[in-house]
Length: 167
Image (cartoon, rainbow, N blue to C red; front, side, top):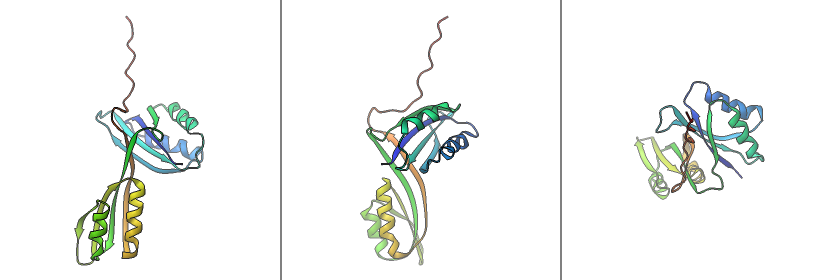
């Protein structure tokens, strides 16, 4: 089973390297890693998808908390959350491309005589299915953002409030 960790980190140089190095040292493979700023410009959000060989996720989370710039880590795997992966797929022009794109809720964003580019945003497995269905038509190039995840409803990931200091 894959595990999806959502992490808040300080938006500082070197944080991504420290997080990736932690996984490298533990010999854990990262299936997907996305990083972006949040509503607070001082905080970035990482979505880390670990492959199914990582058995002790609580140990991974504990190790992440030991890193100076890590603010919060949540394993959303067993929680109510949704995830999306964005893909741009360049394929040889064929009349079937449009109907396949429609089937997956994707759209054509470029079309020349020879090539078409399909844009898709969906769950990771649906993107995989779309890529597999387009392969026989001649995929030329694929680029993907990696998975981003967010809790459903009132499941909100924010830094814990700073404790008030009594005077």
